[in-house]
Amino acid sequence: MFISVSQLEGEMGVNNQIGRFFVDRKPPENNSFWKGKLLYVGFGNGFVSIPVYYDILFRIGMPLNILLDEKHIHFMEQLMHFAILHEKNEISQPEELSSIRDLLNGRIQNQQYFEELNKYLDQPVLKPLGSFGLKYPSMNRADVFLYILCDLPLTDLQWQQAIRYWYALHPCYLIIDDIRDYGRDKENSEENIVIDSGDGPEGFEKTFAELQKNGETMKEINPLIAQFLMDYEEELREFVPVNI
Image (tube, rainbow, N blue to C red; front, side, top):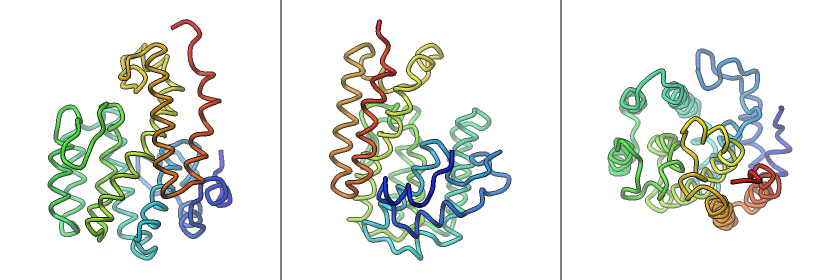
């Protein structure tokens, strides 16, 4: 499925220049995240979330010339390469983290947050630590992406905002995926927020409540993406099993 610049801008509130940059960009070669992909921003929350989150960073004050700098974007793409290799169990978590940290040699903009993020991500099970993490580990499974912030000259306030809206935005994408994949994840004992939240009707209702709560937070920074994400609820309720 093709995601257009007009969709990103009109339906999700993404800045036109950011949307066009990513939509027009060619998928990087020899990169496992984009392996076999003809489009940089294709169907799938993992791809769409990139321009949406970069738009948030723009909204909190990061200039476009810094966000879309080729060296920074190349770093982000390499990060995604190692992240998907770990997700596919082709490398271990320590190998993933070590590879990404090596990419940041000489580029770290805030040593304090870098070290705090390292301690958080080094945990065998990701639980809240310092500024990072949510209650349920299943909602923290994409947090390695936060290393992109270490490559940007964020102020302390911008760091706080970037983390706040990350933990409102990205869990929405994970919730959407987890509700859709509930049956398969349960059968395969995979991480899933519905299961973490108590499973059964209670688990689903808590998960839908979390989606709404995160949407309300996103309204602070981008009302269009907030409404876009909350509008998924009606569709997602069709995925709730009748007999659970």
